[in-house]
Every structure is written in C-alpha cells, then in structure tokens.
Image 1 (tube, rainbow, N blue to C red):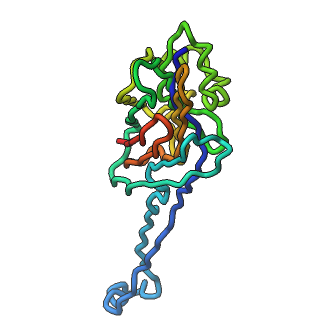
Image 2: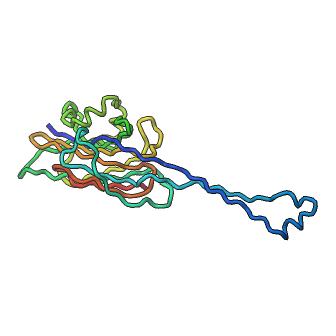
Image 3: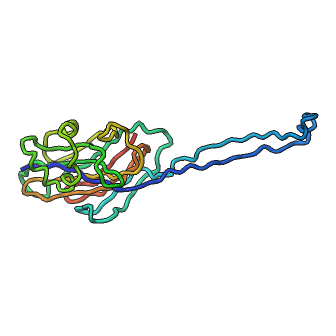
Length: 227
C-alpha cells in the first residue's frame, strides 16, 4: 500500500478600501478674475482606492494537524507591490522515519475556502491501481468527495521515493476561475506501514508573497510563493 499527501483550508482575510477627498482652496486673485462669476466656487477633487489589507500567504500547523485541532499560527512576509499572475509554487521534503526500504508515500495538496470546502487542487501523488488507499489520507478523503475523476487525473502523478517534492499550481479553482483572497492550504501524506502526516496553514491567493507551513511527522516545513 502506498499513499500521498496534502490537506484543508479555513481562513479569512478582508480587503477594505478607503476614500480620501481633498478640496481646492479659493484664492482672492482667482475670484477677481472670475468677474461676474465671482460668487461661484471652483473645486478640484481626487479619490483613491485603498490598498489591499489582506495578509500575504502564510501558513502553519502542529504535528499531525487535523480539522479539529483549531486555528494554526501563521508566519508570513509582506506582499510585493506588483500584481500577481496567480502561479503558486509549493515545495517540501518527505523523509521516512524508518530505516531501510520503505514504501513510497501517497501525498495530496489542496486548497479550501472559509467554509472548509475544497476549491482548488494542487497535486495528488498515488498509484492508480491502488487508488483505494487514498482513503488513508483521511483529511483528503473528507474534503474530496465531490472531486471528479477528470479533475483528479489533471493533477495526479505516480508515487516516488522519499525526498524533495515540488508542485506548481495555476491558482485556478475546480470551476476554472482564478481564486482570490484568504484560503487554507493543506498537505497530507501516508504510506503503508508508516505514519500519517498532515499540516495546513493560511494563504492569501492573488497576493504576491511567500509563506511557510511548519512540518508535521514525516513532512518537512513547506515553502510556498505566489508570483
């Protein structure tokens, strides 16, 4: 039995806009020049929309984090001032805790919205002939009930030995639309005769920046960036 990794999402962030208006002051010389229109006032006004107040992508979790473990702490870096193209890069290392030969892990990574619904697939690593073992990824199994076979096939890959893993995701949800705002990124891993590892953390999609999800079990801390 071989198994993959990846987990769920819950987090909110609010974008707010502010308006600033400035009025032009009257000058006596200007009123004189207006002649008969001296009783009329001229005004200059400018309005600017406030910048996004949402935090940049960041993440965290405790060892074997599950949905019932509460809100994870987070760490993040300030977002860049440039617009994001939506590309999300995710990297981490899977290290087997057992000595000697071990089975390849099953791994899943996905994104959930504030309602804890799976809305985006990053990647799933498993053997098609052993797809029944995907249920060992318990968080993935709970979140992916409505994921279609074609959606799964689009992001899946064959299992491989322990080591470095990296994924690139276009930031689009299951409906084909680019996701924006606060979400939760999940990573889960399991293998035959091995431990179960899962972690998650908040991420603000559509905002350029970098973040880290602390490691859990056989999963190292994961780094992610949004370009």
